[in-house]
Image (cartoon, rainbow over all chains, first blue to last red; front, side, top):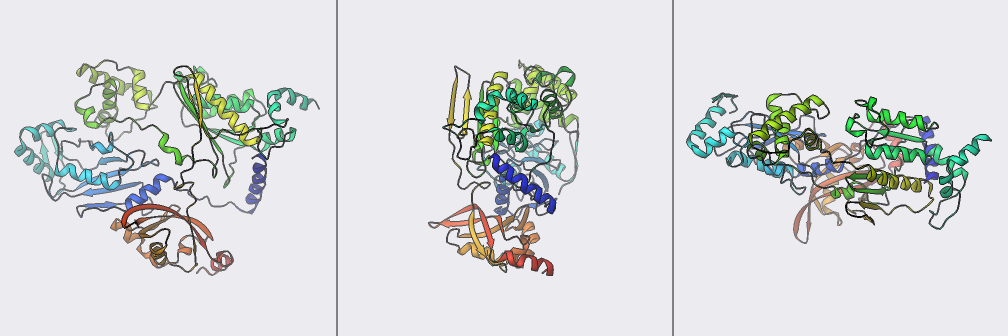
Length: 183
Length: 403
């Protein structure tokens, strides 16, 4: 191997004299896997994606979800996705950028979805996560609360929960908290 | 010369390995003083990390005669490092680890050379070591002959993550209280400000909040050091494990570079929890590895358009890949979905692939799509090695015309 190093040292000197080559950006396995996930996306028309950093940077993107049934019908909710280079060995970091009155999403945009944290497996994909998020809007669940108040209302008084959601979606106060209109 | 006698005594142990022939030596091994000198002049070693294992390694490598050592570490020195990271002193706390480690090694081994020009485009063997308490591992990665880092990435233990709603609603352990303060409470109070685990003020805040939370739920055991442990994923380090793993890594490096003996093949595990157990396992390359796998070889004409290429993949007997999306280096040449990316890349379909790939005679692309095997459809990701026929000859001409 040391002989190899000597040969390379000579090659390097030659190359330096010639000109400085343009460094090639190597692909991480994580980027390639993400590329596969994205090229195979099969989303309902209620979900759309944007890539703020252009067509070649897939590691950061946004998904907007517009539920077509349930309490959140008609609202538009924006999620940011941050994918790490070791994807799929680590789940993407997902935040909800739209302030929403929801038992499983807190006011800072943290999302309680099992497959984003404790139940993430490398066989899951971006598609699975987006369907998981969509599911949160059609089936909000008071058993895994992040917004404690919203969860309690959903459990004890679904009618009132429904009217709270409508008020938040069209822009207004629920309790002390103001929600921007997102319909 | 006086210098050579100094050398002799300095490298007495090293000379036993490098100056004499042996039975286990590599076929290319040529014992002699020249080899020892070459090691010092030509071998360049990058040490990634100047923590517990890194300090041991820098010392071992320097004392084994390697002179061109470089070190990277993004951390700063903390008081709790000092018991085992022996290159650091109390007055170094808060300084960057890599800088101090490099300076201390230079002070002790005066012939150290700090030339920091990296060598591009070459085979870079890697020796990897890690410790966790009384357990450790050392392994050799030679691109092309051993499994690469990616082939065995599944060996990493999965990270422990608590459900956010457990943290928010039903904490049961001290760690739950700490993660609540770290992941939920921090954002609520410091809107927009990112948490910095290396800022003692931030850590103190998380600790105080975690204590409050633990009191509320009647949970015991939140301490400042546990807070650091949970937030920064710190596992207690044992100096003797570091010393053993470092010694294994350095010996492998020396063997790899000089050929004075067979290298480890290829993954050593050390376990000192009960008694002592050391075992070497030979992992094999993942033939479908996206990083080190060979890829399917395809010969193409320089005139083939991207659309034609995608059609060819569907008919290729080894691939039978339909609806392909194509990526070359960091560029998406064509994406089948989602619609927004399909529209952005559609215009590439009518261009010759050779031009899209920067007119290189040979390169790797990655394609994803659907294959049908035995009548069943499955999605797949393949690495392809494309060779353009006669491209060497036309490259210069084409460039000149700017076609």
